[in-house]
Amino acid sequence: MIQAKYLGKMVLFVFKRKIYNELLSWKSNSNGKTALLIEGARRIGKSTIAEEFGKNEYPDYQTIDFSIQPESFKSIFEDLSDMSVFYRNLFLSLRRSPMPEGSLFIFDEIQFCPKARQAIKHLVKDGRYHFVETGSLVSIKENTKDILIPSEEERIEMYSMDYEEFLWAIGSEYELENIKTIFNNRNVNQSALNHQVFIKTFRLYLAIGGMPQAIDKYIETNDFYAVDKIKHNILKLYEDDLKKIDNKFNTKCYTMWKSIPSMLSKHNTRFNLSSINERADSVLIVDTLEKLKESKMAYCVYKCNDPKLGFEMTKNESFFKLYLNDVGLFSSIVFSSDMNESRDIYQRLILDSVDANLGMLYENYVAQCLITNGHDPYYYSWNTNNKTYEIDYLIYKKGHIIPLEIKSGSKFTTKSLDEFKNKYSHAIGERYIVCTKSLRFGDNTTILPMYMLFCL
Image 1 (cartoon, rainbow, N blue to C red):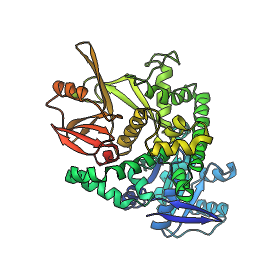
Image 2: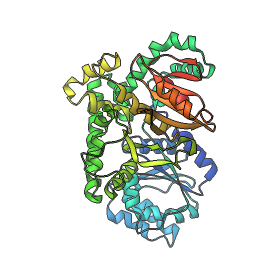
Image 3: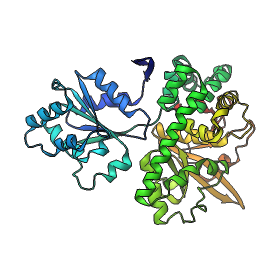
Image 4: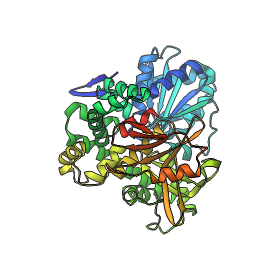
């Protein structure tokens, strides 16, 4: 369901998000005995969904944005010896009447007030209110060196809007349900009949992506130039944040993040570190990867050396690939660096007339889709008879290894999947070729259209 907030002449949409059910589950199971920390990249809607949760599920709620609060306000959290006095001072500083017991406090950008996070232990024990925190993991970890991390804190991770949420947002619930029904019923005839409709909507998602502000702007204006402007503003924000991380921790996050599109375009078997002149196992690269992952602005997929023995157990940390956290941001970097051409570029992307190989875009989408749907993907490459083979992604499903090959063209072979099956036949479940063709089954290999990937 989409709800609208009216601020002057501007309409801001509050989109249906999957994480809302996790918030409901936390409220029901915790009953105020724990706080909930929502982690995630910037501009993905953490604060918005927390406030929507407070508005719908509590008698009242109060958001405290610690990024704009003065030190005098933050000092309130240093004395919790008398909780009644604490709450009196807190509400006075907020210039509002006390909320009814059982209401919700939202501690937004909690990383800017470590003492408030440490206070969670006592606030939860007092039991008057419920508490949700939001923040950036890089700053949260850095700003907790001198405090006691509360054990009364649960954590969930939030992502940009995935394809299902995108379809909800643009009012295509019927299309979404059709895709699920076709996949579950293995109805290839219905898939072929609706394929062009489905693929056109999917290309719209590739162009816009899952940043709520970008989707909001598209719904409001149907103007791809305006959408691209929003995304470039987010990209600039990300770039500034990564540069700050590098300056603070002496890492190379910005350099590696900016290199992602060019690395994917070259189809290397791993991220090439020659521009940084460092080994993959160097302290600099290890620290950089850790900060990049904490920032949630990029996803890291490692190679496993022996899928049969387990992905995690045979993870090769010297071989990895990086992906942007949102395919729409990826599109803006690759296809619309000149914003004056963005309308034309987006129209050609949606109409499938871009004079470029979209393989890197599809590969980034697949990584994002797998991760946001709870999978922990790896990749695998090997040599046989002086030939190199690679499986783009491996996931576990129902105790079996599921290999996925990503194909951007209309013609392709299954050579890597066939060789992989010969090596690990007893451990493999169904094999998938993820591409732009309609759904097909055969020889234990499924041709899976990109827009159906979330059904796995």
